[in-house]
Length: 123
Image (tube, rainbow, N blue to C red; front, side):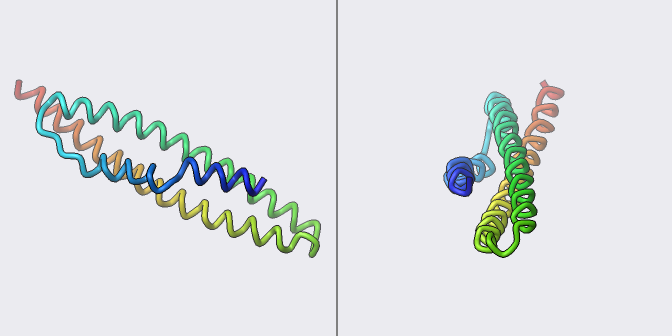
């Protein structure tokens, strides 16, 4: 199971994925049409990453439960408990990083939506 968790986290939370969010956060727009398109892509990005955060929460819960079960088994699983705790630490760091990026996307999206509303009012 540890390998599956590692693989899932590696594929779903690669630095490349997080870089995509950063690039959108740095994106500058100059027209109403670009604002609208950006808001649509930010909405879909937000949904995609919110799902990933939710998935991470499920994995975190699983790991906590696994650690508790292994503790009941005693010394035999001491090394495995350490492995799970390391994975948990890494996953929690990824989750924190992702939630921060998600918050930035949300703030940017809300800012753009306000600009669109003002542009509509002025037309």
